[in-house]
Amino acid sequence: LQSFYSTVDKTLEANPNHARANMVKKLKVRMDEPIADSAAQEKELRDMVGRPDMKIKTSKHFILLHDTPDKAAPNRKIPRADERLQLLEQVYESFLLRFYASGVELEIPKERLKVVLFAEHKDYLFYATKLDPGLSSAAGFWTSTTNASVFYDNGTTEDFKELLELSEELQKDKAEAVRTRAPNAADIKRVADTLQFIVNLERENLDIEVVSHETTHQMAGNTGLLPRDVYIPSWVHEGLATYFETPEGANWGGIGAVNSDRLKRYRALEPDTEHSNIDFIVGDQIFDYAGSHSSTLHGYGQAWALTHFLMERHFEEFIAFYRRLGEMPADVKLSQETLTTVFNDCVKKERKALDTEWRSYMRGLKTDLEVILNER
Figure 1 (cartoon, one colour):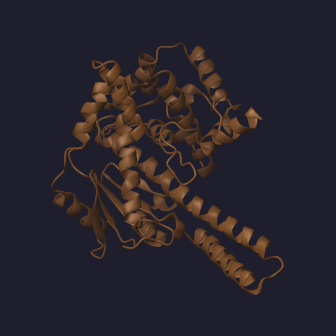
Figure 2: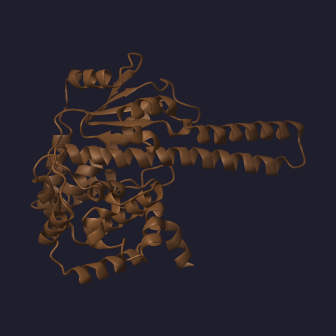
Figure 3: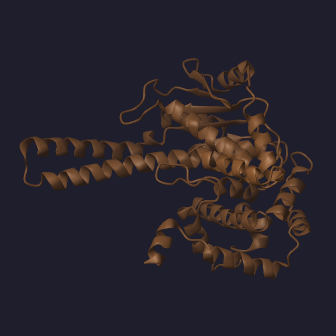
């Protein structure tokens, strides 16, 4: 972000009338305007969750209800609630910058956005399944009705706890091997430290991916891009959220970074032109007809791929499609035919040519590892 703002300043030094750079400067001023009172949002959160023991913490644009420890975990600089707020702020700012820098002005939320963070997966699961049993497999969620994002610490699932216990046992073995100067101490240390690193990295990556994903849903619903009262097709919401979600080594990889899992899912379905098909995605059949968790994940991969392509190669037409969707009647599910007609009105390129361009674009997308291997 600092590099981005520095680039904007240099742009304005070269051209003080640069329209988009000036839009970014004005946006920064508006984002920095303080939000004083969040008492109403605090009450909404407390009434929603019903846990008087949970604590409130606020940042510039978010109010967080949580029950995580007030002290930083070992090897961490700040408590988990503060880490979460930092990531939320980064996604908030980057989301708005992505559009303003491209000439698209969005609404700036006038209130702090509501977030819940459970320290334990079991508490999250109890709350989530009361709202909707279908959320039992979700790693986090945002709903338009509550307008709140809900998360948990990904290191507290049963599977992850087993991994952590294994890592702790190996750390004890390492300490014992070092103490007794065992002949294989170096090997034990290497295995123990490698597993500890991988477990911690995966824990952070899972947190980052789900937070950036759900916060993108929340930002789209609160900035007028995809209004909360309009029935937005799943592929549109999920495509945008996956475009923003990429974790990269326990950091947020940023907007449009290549997500290896989404790319793998796209490639797996790509030869199946009945389902890896622009019309099938645009009409939302890719999600409507998904009969299993696996097919839903393939739907995410296709939605990510088409969104990535349109955001990078047909941005203005795609934003026009977003705008048209936002003007639709509230709470009315749009038919496949209507979605296809609106899409064609906005993205006017002939379908066969667009499909060819999309597939060519996707063949050019590589993960960081693939780029490195190809260079060799």
